[in-house]
Length: 372
Ligand SMILES: *Cc1c(COP(=O)(O)O)cnc(C)c1O
Image 1 (tube, protein in one colour):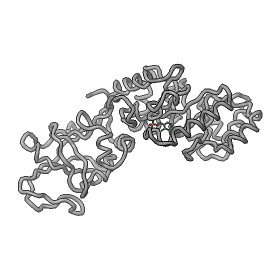
Image 2 (cartoon, protein in one colour):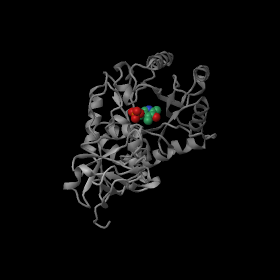
Image 3 (cartoon, helix red, strand yellow):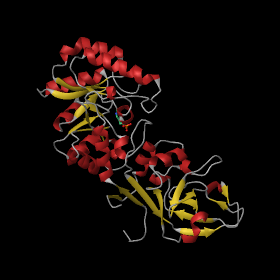
């Protein structure tokens, strides 16, 4: 650290906590909220976010991979954590030993994984917890209806497994009009009935705000915790991520001057003022934020909206700050995410979703917490 102005990513953990409270206050009676903290809590920091969520009363966590779960376990010896990718494609029950040694809960996505977990638990002469994942129409992970029929027939052979939840995942909950939502709910409800009293775990963020009948016993929000607006039915969440960058250089351009790789943008006047900031696709600022014929992304310079011009490069972005030139000098900070722009609005300009912005920008170091 040199003390020079630098790219700065701040995470507001109080906002993460507030979002957990907002979600919890919307749940149907009997339902509680887990937290999905996979991929370093969508770039906000798994350890820091998990700690504050636990303080808010969260008692169940989901990560994607076994490695993430081991990192989680390192920090939190006792908290319940389930692994969405289950055995991760492993073909032997050796992976199961790692789960058992570390007190981790696999999400079982295939009948084969159910068998692997049964043998690992039986080998350890123990009964081990698991979550059974059914595919209700997304065709990404989970037991197919045919596999579920076989599961039911073989059920008595799984005596070393204690199923905590039956879960499924929604494909279209961010589109309330989509017919697949109701179809998936029907499939889930029907299967859950066959499993008698097994608690259900169904809704992601958008599913939570879709309809209370989607809540069952445990909901699995990720995005909403981190401030994303994923559903038109969702109340306003608190933004959690603030990113600023210093201006490295300011230039006055003449009409026709070219900017950036490929010389894709040209100054339209002799008055253009251009600023260069140390941010780029290496930090997760997407190349699709570059200026194109039909649009571009923006940054805010002293609160004034300024367009990105030319191509985003690996660690530099050029911005037309003409509108803010009078009050701006080298070293001033521009806002990429913050009071004026959320991950969702930046995502819309870049042709993607807020999830990709958050997980991408999570690579910016160092992260600071609650220093906003
Ligand atoms: C990532 C994920 C979630 C969280 O989804 P959000 O849309 O971020 O709330 C829930 N369930 C599964 C299976 C996931 O993969």
